[in-house]
Length: 312
Image 1 (tube, rainbow, N blue to C red):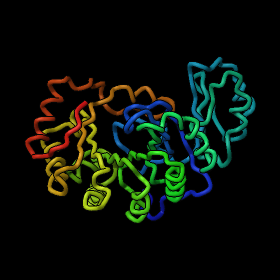
Image 2 (image 1 turned 180 degrees about the horizontal axis):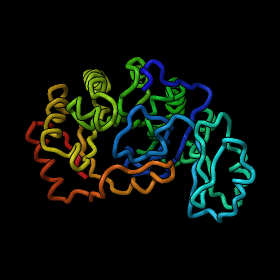
Image 3 (image 1 turned 90 degrees about the vertical axis):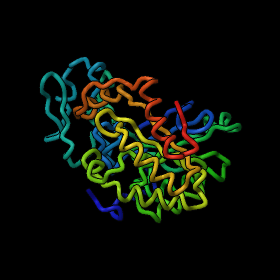
């Protein structure tokens, strides 16, 4: 993995893999959620595998394919292979895949993301401006939005100039200086705190939890502390343990007892996305936790003294 100081910081444009309108779970009110490409973590349960790589790539939609072999006919050398009645793309190919996408008659081959300049993305966000007048706004998610660096900071500034409420969903695995620059322009800060134990966190995500703890401590001791909502995704046999939930809750309580904390129930639907990016979902087919199981976890949090537990 690249060091944090080497993460790409794009100012002219950024890759966006999805824009979800009328979202109700990514902040207050109706929101437009923008999903940026690129993430420094590799969580075993990743909900958005199409957002992991910072690079644009072609993806294949089997249900749209008419198996005409047109892509095979127009492909350049080393660009792809056609096997098992479908195309496989060479992601190490030095060039674009425009020809495959252009000549596919059924739209079965598409890019996983599109570049947006700040002006273009702001214009897209403002299409929903009528819904922002009350308590709605825009939420930047991913991937990891901070991998877009100065682009994100400039976009946040532009949003505030337009009086748009702003939220971010972040792992905080980013340079602290970048986080400091963003804080004045954020109204809501969702922070993923997945696993307290550093060894387990690295095993689950390929990244240590140390930097996350350090950055959480900084934010919860800053003027932005009341904007923060800490979230723990409950993954069966991994993060959803009594010890992990208790450790995270105690850690954030000792920094700021008034911090908001949310436990996210397991989402079993993410596995359907993995074939699109030629990945395999590693986890068994777990089910969501029952209301009784969720209440058990809530009880653990409340025993630590945290006052602002968000329940689903």
